Image 1 (cartoon, rainbow, N blue to C red):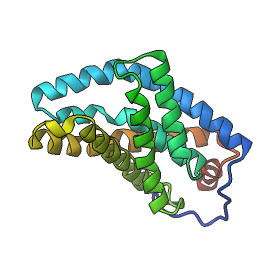
Image 2: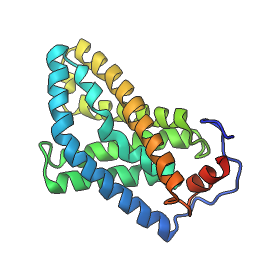
Image 3: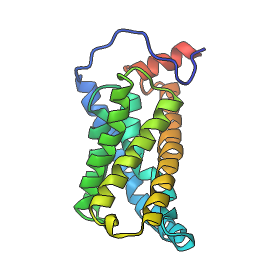
Image 4: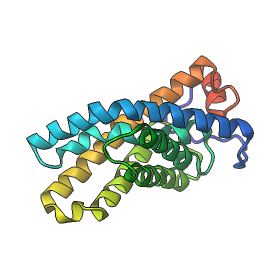
Length: 204
């Protein structure tokens, strides 16, 4: 039985296949639809948490980081985290939300944050712990972007609390849910043409 953080040992190529592109597009659109719903739920939660303590709203951010985690865990190719998160952000912006074009900046930053974690792990570790680390990485990248775009003017206490809560939310919501969704998709047979799907069959 493989453990959550066991590195894969099978040989792999990092070039993108047609099926990789198609699945990245499907994941991006599906995650973007999730974002559209979370724009209302998470947006309200953000305000409620911040009303308790400024910066606590970071606890609501994790779902918006989900695309990069799913892309990385499912496709396992360089650029997958960025591609899926950015496409999801594009869907959210196209449908319409309260952040407009800056949604794309966030999608790029979040995808890069997750991508850098997968890169640091040499695209070889795909368990729950790497997923949580990638979610945390996406959160840190988003925090840096928001700091540069206006949060620099806010208090140090706000920014510290916001960073900590974003990291927690990214690790638990984006990382945990992204990992669970990937496992569920693999178990269903939907990922039979991917290493993630073959691993699921080997673990049975």
